[in-house]
Length: 401
Image (cartoon, rainbow, N blue to C red):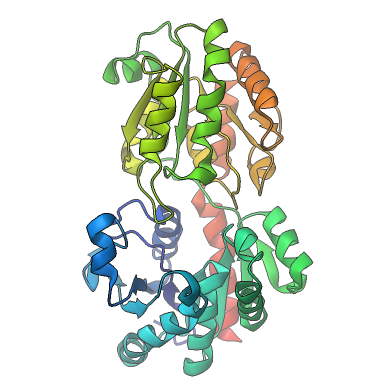
């Protein structure tokens, strides 16, 4: 292999592991495609502090600890521990993340001779990566993925976030709206390239609706809505549930499928189940739990409309996954959502927090005749291959210079 070919350290604390199989799947999707063209190794720091086992007594899913090393389909993934004290100590996460990765990086510099660090999320991961980049004298790329919006409201994080973007050699943003957001904060627009997430059409494709419904024991004459995502406040499942009674007046057999489980941000399943009970919707809402990507095309193909009343997204890959199964999307006007649902043949975007607009959009979507094959084709046009070509060209340029 030529000396100037990219040899990457992929740096992200949100990377799937055996204990968190659904965390950061979109990062693994992208980087596994990159791995077909250049060598890479993953470092995924895991938060730890001395008293965390006490918290796990009350919250069993708090900070699950993976093995120190996993081989994932031929890719080496290291999970070093870094000191992360809940609450006020989080402002030091970036520094401790870099510190805990020093030993592994030193070993990999000898055995693997990495020449580029590719980080995901500006803080703490990107900040830590830029420190490592200085220490090991290699360029760093950072991908913005959406957490930069809420973090920019915390002065100490904003400062470090901007320093990371300033020190990076190249910044990728999954949406134009996210790029505009950090540029308004003071980041350099010249070094930020918009590269959206992609879709794996080998995993996401439509199957016959009748068969899909039989598999999930859903009658043919039922209208089906579906949402997919971590069961956290931000994703807005509760906002969909609250308008179901009004929809059910018009569509008495309506069914709402919720696919997802606990995430690093938390787990509000109990609260959602309580809401379903209170509104007497037990016959109309099904919790299907978390599901590996390979199985999602089943329930997606069984549905009529994909809905996500989300409060914040960078580039919601799940929209493309739903579209690849033929579903129009109803979602909120936040982050890059309007960039993914790019015109009205693909779905409807409504103002965030407007329950009436969400209700009307779902009612309209259930009545409309959608060009489902055109929706599938649009998703296929957003395949990973096209994204990866841009990334590889940039990695090569940075390493050669």
